[in-house]
Length: 607
Image (cartoon, rainbow, N blue to C red; front, side):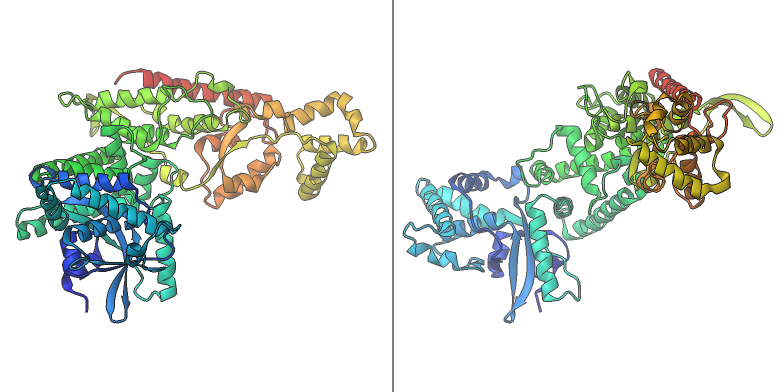
């Protein structure tokens, strides 16, 4: 049976001191798939100097050596710890301990699965073995550094390494009944993910461990506070994981393993703008450095909570929900100006920075001031020439305008009305409730910008084949305009080129299938899911309309503006539902301009 104190580390990430690793004789194995030790003189000296500079009263209860990710295995009647991540620091500390205490006695053990390079260092004669070379150079760097220092320096280093240096011990989670082969596969996958920067889970759990370790003075107080804080962190994660909340905050970004990582990014960027790319676990490192006392730890904890409750407050406010949800739902256009609003966590960080007064802690903007600020960001996202946008030159900007069209329809519907008490008018003015756009439904699907009328095919033979199939499929119900076009082509089968001089043919074709240039304009574009778009293909307008009616009856999500297009709600006096004619296109273009213009006017009006 493994000791109870060690069992705790199997259950959740916790700090573990070097003293405990040595006292309990931890046996670490470096798996053969790892490249081996590679630290240079620079990294070794930097670690020693950092550990020497540590002072408990100033830097907190321990010096964090960052994560040590391991897998626990039982071999020949004893436990071993396979190192998945953290090899460089673990090995360097091992070499420092050997130098400080005159050998490996009383230290944790460290072995390489491929070959025990540590035992071969004394026999090294400058050959080409890269692992032994780097280990030997690190050993020489440590020895030279200590020789050049006085004894008191060595004593400080010995005390700090043994008593105050801690790893955050993270044990790989395995299934209860996982086979050895399955566990080996999981280990390799975890190693690959950690080394390609694709595992945000570790940082958030390290932050959780950091908070839980530092809270409370006595054991009883600590345990009570740990339970409370742990429950609160879990509740934050559950809230952020809800589809409605996640897709509002993150647009179409895929939900990660731990959604609370997104919250940490928003908080960090609101304070420091950029997340450094050359630092391992940068947010965790920042918190670890700043949490030198209990009061500072509690202050950081309060900052994280304030950020969370501010974001959930925006979610609960229907107006802010729609405005921020639109900003988060945009796609990156081809050409962005410096004033163009950023995306995702950078956008939310900027909004949060403004909402909390930024560096000016004396100023806290009101809800109205904050709404006006969000409106400004929305205005900056709308290009001046939005009615001239084209599918073939900037598909993403066209997508953004079509998304805004659907959301602006809800916001523009907000009106002032008098509230009443029973049958009596009170005279107090109130706002009608704004409907909330279903971002959780929208972003759970893949979207395409769809051509309402299809493009004319390059070859007339292709068009003729499609018309013949259409005539067969529809038989007696084929629309008259389509039938006339089909007959025209039937009569000119021998020489399709003669149709180029037929005015009626050209007019019919233009109404049914605009040329490529016109097909790319905004008045011929709308939003459809990838599934529905593939289903209707490159069919004529009336065919698409019939197919979409069927999809909608089956529960397919079709945006309101797209429904309006295929129902011709924008056309005052629609002439049937066969063609998407010039009158329909002009009415749709006018509706886009009016809706976006009304939204701009609303955003320009201060609350």
